[in-house]
Amino acid sequence: MSRFSEHRLLIAILGIPVLLSVGLPLLADLNALPLPAVGALMLGTVALPFVLLHILSWTPWVERIVPILHRDLPGTTGGQSNGLRIVLDPEYTARWFLEHELEHTRRTWRWTFLGKWVIKQSERGRIWWEAVAYAAGVNAGRPLDEAARAMSGHRYDFDVTEDEARAAISRHL
Ligand SMILES: [Zn+2]
Image (cartoon, rainbow, N blue to C red; front, side):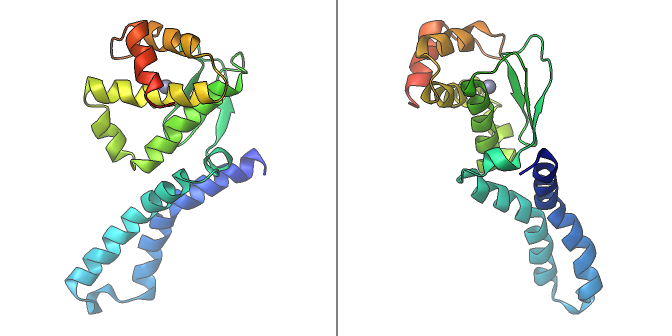
């Protein structure tokens, strides 16, 4: 599957509510429907892409769907992800860097973006968010000590020592 079609797949998933919200009123006279039905229809339309992404997050498809771009990322730990795309620094070629960002993507889809925002409101949540991603990297072959060093050494919006980072990552191995 080419990169281009991967982008198209994600756009299709997220574009469904737009198409439905434009198409449904054309197909059905919403005024003829009872108000709760219209409400349920609109809610379902908005919720659909999030439900689809949530379901996909449990499948190996995440890697095939999310666009993965390569460009220099100075001052990062090698990658970035926001749930809609992954950016990897070409210098960070080890598989575990991609696994880290894929785990962030999976969790973002699973928690439907809004849940991610809620989780990241607390320091405990932010530490957990990174620990599960570092654990995915360790499961892909990254040495635990190296992962703990990276997690404690990078300037995240939380403070953990190397020992605390190692313990947090270990909980998810
Ligand atoms: Zn991360």
